Length: 90
Image (cartoon, rainbow, N blue to C red; front, side):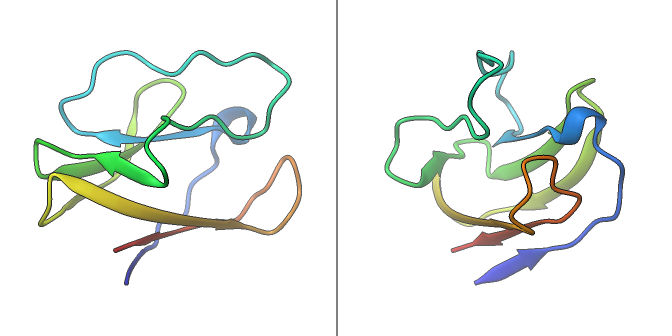
């Protein structure tokens, strides 16, 4: 498993994890704490690059991935306004 590391202040503690070619952002309902694509823990990455960006679409990280489908594991420090987010890629 590959671990991503970056230090940044994410506005409203929100980050988007998506394929580099993806357009738009998820529909945020203001109630949930996590919004995911219905793909059983896998993110479609046909461009071969995974991106982590903030709500203003500023790229925090970009990493090449070997498969058109990438399994993600995400950890936080357990708070709704988490200041720690760890992302594992497999």
